[in-house]
Image 1 (tube, rainbow, N blue to C red):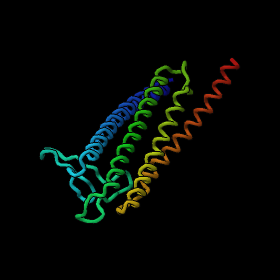
Image 2: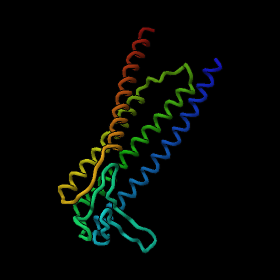
Image 3: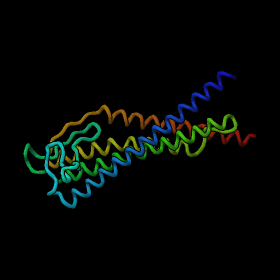
Image 4: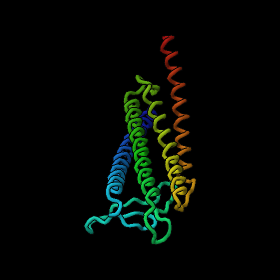
Length: 208
C-alpha cells in the first residue's frame, strides 16, 4: 500500500513537471510562430528593405535588432540566393518564410495538445480508483498531436522541393524529421490503444 502511494505521488510530480514543460514549450513555439508571421508579412510588404545573406534574408531595424527569414528548418537548409552575392530568390524566401510559420504553429499545437493531455492524466491520477483514464479526450488529443508531428516535417520537405524548383540549393537530412514522424506514429498507435480501452470500458459499464 505504501509503495502504491509513493508511486502515485511520484507520478503526480512527474505529471505536473511534464505539464509545466509542455506549457512553456507551447508558449515559446507560439511566440516563434508569431514572430515568423510578422517577418513574413513585412517581407511581402517591403522585400527591398531586406538584405540577402545567402542562408538568410535580414532586415536591420534601426541598428537595434534584426528581423530575419532564415534558410534552415528542422533537417532542411535552404539557400535564399541563387548564388553568392546574388539577389534574393523571392519564391524561395516567401515559401521558406511561410513554411517556418506553419511548422512552428504545428509544433505549438502539438505541445498544446500534450499539455492538455498531461493535465487530464494528472487529474485522473489525483482522482485515484474512482476514475478511468479511458476518456474521449485522451485519444482525440493523442491523434491530433500525432498528426501535427507527422505533417510538420512534410511541410519542410515540400518547401525544400519548392526551393529546388525555384533554382536554389540546399541540404536535407532525416534525423529530426524521422524522429518526429516516428513519435507521431507512436502517438497515433497509443490513441488506438485508448480507443480499444474505451470500448472495453463501455462493455464493462453495460454489464454492470
